[in-house]
Image 1 (spheres, helix red, strand yellow):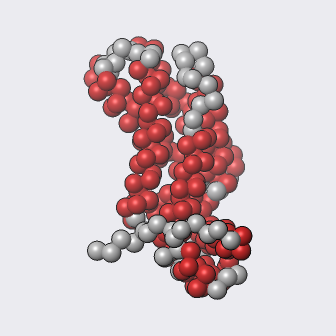
Image 2: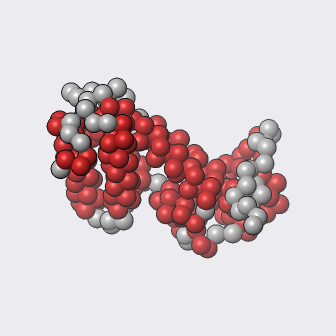
Length: 212
């Protein structure tokens, strides 16, 4: 089967081409919000960007390569927001957690195009691969913190971290589905509470996963 997502062609060197590439990515971002991923094609992207369709193909093999570039841009932002400003310790982790969740939820609510791409990753293996890389990075931060503040075994730490990142990722997605700002804030604060309660059990008690 032909690979749907291909790498963008070599980066343009001329300013005009760079401007076109930026316009194409921005047009794709806008269309993801306006019409959804199922209604997008290269002709529509070119029209939205105000460039000839040949310019789109000159820079990108197909629309999926544009999605990939856009998703990678979002991924860099997410990883930056999800990295605590200070090393997590038993004294500051709750405050750091609040800061990270606030930043991520704000980003997800503002960047509706990312929400559409995130929801579509299950149908596109390359996007799923990038998403898994993001989750692995977040899980690494979680593992490092738990390892230094608990007596759990490495296997137990991995299970706890995987569970935590998994339900946090899913609940973060749920936050953006609410239309009312008050509902979004409530869901965000509930997520903070759930994560803290879950982590406190293992960090404070330090007992095994199967010990209840």
